[in-house]
Image 1: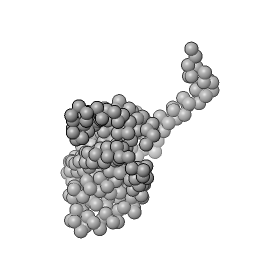
Image 2: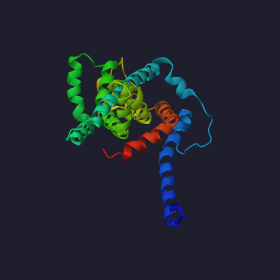
Image 3: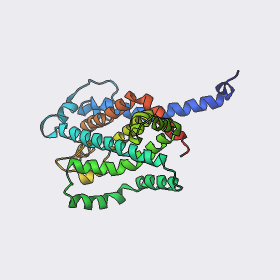
Image 4: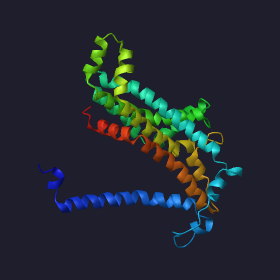
Length: 281
């Protein structure tokens, strides 16, 4: 039997491959350039012509973790704010998504759209009212303030995505658990939730990436006691010039953990994104 790929014209297959190659180059070349530049000296980084053969050095990374430029607190703040906010977003999003997927009200789709529409609002529209609320609650320049800011941004997305995953679970699965003597909570915790493991992983990773890379909320709500990695990178751009070596080193530190996290859970991530995309809810 001839497969669909075999029936595809050669020109079309070559065109698809060319687009994929261009997309990979578009994505990977800047990343490779950034990582390579982080190991270059100041002379090599600012050379008029690109230096492909150079003597690697760790001076840029050493400078980031010594003296007044110690990057340790920034990393710790990023880990705390993004990690805790992502866990809370997944936990609350799973409960709300379960309720949204299981409800039989006629306006369910409208409610789901209203929830995700709050995520569509420009950050500039959200920042001002949040700033007034946080200032009144004394949450400016604090890790809890950043966590709440990230949570307001990630929670609508988490609810919407988790409701799609729960909609993929057949109702008969939960009904069988209830008939077997489980309470509603036991059926959710022991039967339904494990079936959406790929969805939980997908939602957590996406929320983590959004929070880890955030610049706008960190710029407005953080201060000397809560600044994150993107703010540390911004401080290297001054009126006197840009330290390209240290800037690319910070960029590498920011990007690589998320790449490693994505690769570590890629199996669940691909499965989760696929299931979430085909749901009819």
